Length: 44
Ligand SMILES: [Zn+2]
Image (cartoon, rainbow, N blue to C red; front, top):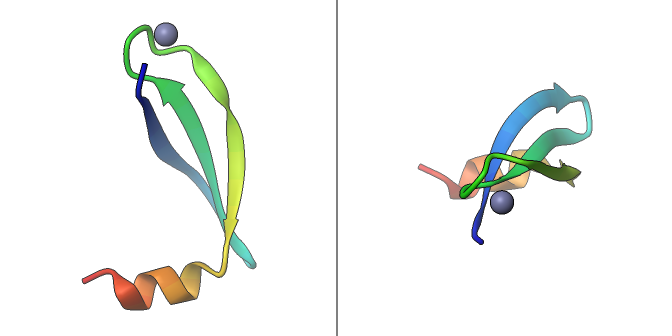
């Protein structure tokens, strides 16, 4: 099953994302993505 990421929280050093199964909606865990400033520059 593919997963969908959802932004939970914006931290000083990154963003906390939650991953959920798109089939049943079960939470698969969270992940902190750092260096969010770089990704914001890349994204339009
Ligand atoms: Zn599922």
